[in-house]
Image (tube, rainbow, N blue to C red; front, top):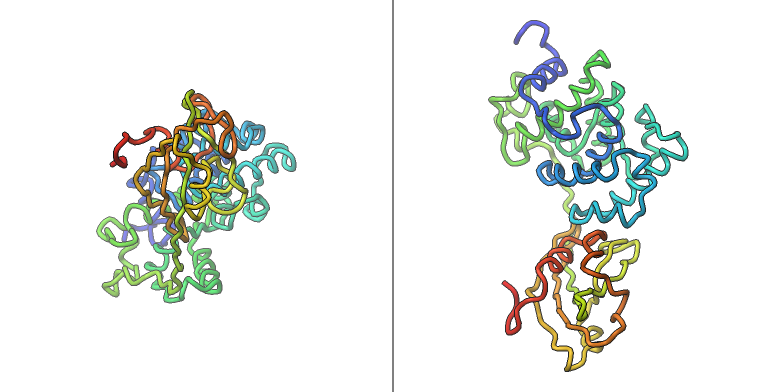
Length: 350
C-alpha cells in the first residue's frame, strides 16, 4: 500500500482522481442546483438514461429560479418518460421553497436540506458534501452495497436500525479534510457503479480490496443482506385513444395520487365495460397490442383501443392538438402510442 494512502478515504479519493468518472454533465462545476437535479433524476434511474433528460432540463430551466417560476405542466413535460413523477413534483415544490424561504440560495447543511420536499438524508449529504465540503456521508443503494461488502456488514438492511448502524460506520470512514469531500463522495458513487456492481464485482480495479471483508471471504456478492421483498401486484387497464379529424387526441389530467398521478393521459378504466358503453358501431375501433408497463410495486397490463371519434365533444377531458401534446407530461407508453399513431386496420400493431 503506497505511503500516505493507508486510509479508506485516501485510497478512494486517489482512485477517483485517476480512474473515476469526470465527464458527466453535472460534474462541470459544483453548482448545487445541477448536483441536486442530477441526484433526484438518478434515484432509481440509470446514468445513461438521465444524461439526455438532464441536459434538456437545464437547457430550458437553467437555474432554481427558472424552475420555481415554471408551471407544473412544463416541469412534467420535461420529465415525461423518466418515470417516478412524484420526484418532479417534489423538485418543483422544493425550488419554490428555496426561492421563497432561502432567497434562491441552497441551504449549506444537510440538516437544512432535509426540509426540502423530496430530499432525503443521502441526497442532502450529496448536495452539501459535493458543493460545500460538508463531512456527511451519502448512503444510496450503490454505497450501501459497496460499504456492506467492504465492512462485511451483516445487518439486515430491510430494518431501519441496521441502516442507521451502517450509516454510523460510514461516517467513521470520511476524509479528515472538507476539501476532499467532493471527490470522496463522487468516488463512492463511481466505485458502486463501476466496480462493485449488484451481480458482479471487478475487485482487480478496486482500490480498497486489500482490506475488503467481502473480498477476503471470497463471496462479496452475499452482501448487502436485505430480506424484505416487495409484494408485486398486477392490474389491467383499458385505455381509450380517441382522435378526431384534426388528429387531436382526448387527454385529461390524472388525479394527483395513484397511477401516473398529475400527468396527462387518455381516459382509462379497470374494466372494459365502461369503455364499450361509450362506443358506437360507426366509430370503428382499432385494437392495439397489449402493453406491459412495469412500475415500482405493480405491473400494468394496458389494453389500448384507438377510436376515430365521430362526435365533436371529447369522450372525457379535452381535445389536444399534435402541436401541444408533445409538450405535456405524458406517461412513457402514452407518448410512444401517440408518436406511433393507430395500428393498421385489420390487426394489432406489432
